[in-house]
Length: 178
Length: 310
Image (cartoon, rainbow over all chains, first blue to last red; front, side, top):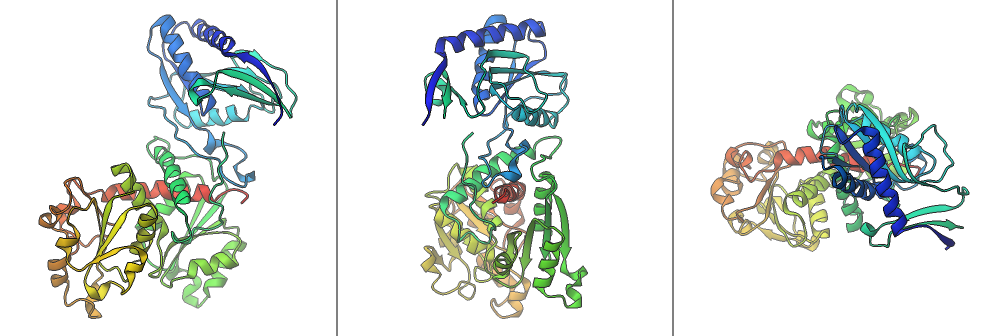
């Protein structure tokens, strides 16, 4: 159990999500064709919150989907036990839609690469954008976010945890030093 | 993302070795795989580059195709070997055949064989993963898993349900695997068939035995009909198929003895009019086709859960 530092508290998370919701609307000029897809498990809750905020600000319908990227991971052959697989629930056609992928922490970029492959297997979106609550650096692939809650420079060995109300915790982003 | 213990095993040889948690894991995983079958592009890259060999020493359409589809949907390469067209007719031994396939890089061997115990023997000797697709009268684990999945999908649970398995229990690996799976998950199992086709002392597996079908079906939640083979008549286990049908066929009248929301299941292929009336097979209670759909998802789950560096 390492030393934990709180980087964002509940209120800071709230403000970041509000700003991201506005940025998504600004960049996409409204909600036309917009759909948010949260990456399990952290991204799914954040995507739902963003959809609520976007609809509160501008009122148009925004589709929400949840993507499980387990089947698209690049490290399955290396793992001794397979990760728990959960359902992908995307109840709309992604073709021609403006998809915003949502995840909690952006790190190496491999999860997002897997998510891109997952979305592409479901159709041909007009465009895919990326919203993350935290960008902690250390990219191993050429992936970059369009919307960022906060940039946190971290050391590789550190862990960044996003705790959310939906999972029974108090909203907080913490960095754990080993 | 939480890490699972996976299946902690190299092979799937039978339900008897699985504990309830492992069975639940397979069923939960299968639910996620069922979604893949609803997409326009029914493929995920998970087992890309892996080789799955279907080694079938007994004919099969259903099981073999199901495994083939499951592997292909996971992007694996599939080879089908049916022994009638292989060098087995030249007298090649089982072990040599299996070792040859492993030497070519088979990652999974899906084996169906008329002799009980063959998959276990292969699993001990080979490094690749062995999946039992039906061995003699011993087990047919993926069938029981897809049956359990279908029941759970329809009823929301398995614990506490009354399930009747009807037919040639003695020669049925499907019955055996289902008995293990259902009792392990907390269902009550009733077996029903002619006395000549129910093994003595089978109650020790935790099931009740009925020789009268009307009594067996009283108030059940699920009815599983097994296929009666033509050759049982030839070997005097039953006097005639007609008499068997009269006493043990699932007719619409008999169906009414069960609960109103009873599920009618059959592993296939069916002998319409013999063990099951056509109206029942095609009726509203029948989930026989769901079993087939679920079979692909369950087999995908098994392939996925057995993969990994292990």
